[in-house]
Length: 117
Length: 111
Image 1: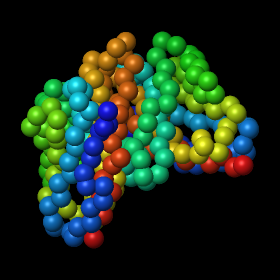
Image 2: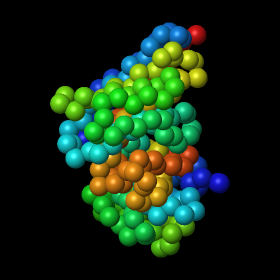
Image 3: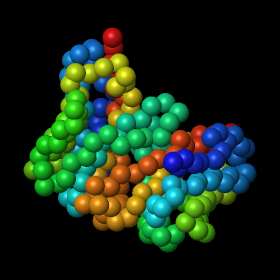
Image 4: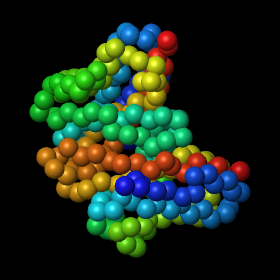
C-alpha cells in the first residue's frame, strides 16, 4: 500500500504566483481532507470531501484558496494569488467513511512545505 | 475557532518517567477523541483513540483518559522512551469523519 501521496514535497514561489498542491488518496478511501499546519494554530482543517463531494469548506481562509476532487484518486489545492502568510505545511489525508464502529483514523501524506517569498 | 486546545507547546521528560500530555475541548458533539504522533518531515500517524462514552483506553505504554465533565483528556506514556520524542496532536471527531486537531505538543524524552 503506497499510502497517501502528496506532491510536490517542497514548493518555493514568489508572492502573487499560483500554487497547486496535489494529492492521491489511499485506494478505496472515499474521504479526503486538506489540513494546514502552522505554529500558531497547529493542524487546521481547510476542506474535506466525501465521495468526491466537498462537505465542509468553512476552513478555507479566503477566496484565493480553492480545492477540487475530480475523481476518487486525485485532489488539488490551489492558491491564487499566493501570499507570504500562506507559507506553511499542507497535509492531505484520507479515510474510509463511514468507519467501522466510529473508530475513524486518518492516514496522512508527508505534506507539502510551501514557502511564499 | 479552536475546538481543541493543547495549551502546552512543549514538554520535556527523562527516559523511563511518565509523560502526560493534556488536551481541552469545547465541542460537546465530539464522539471520539484521538491522539496522533508526528515526526519531523512526516505526516501525523494515529496513536490511540477513546470513545466519548468511556473514560479510559489503554494500549501498551499509552493510556488516554477522558473527563467529559471537565472537557479534558490526557495521554499518559509510561515508561517514556527517547523514540517517543515527537509532536503529539489531540483531535476530536464528530459527524463520523469531521476531525479537528489541536496545536500540538512537542515531547522530548531525554536519555
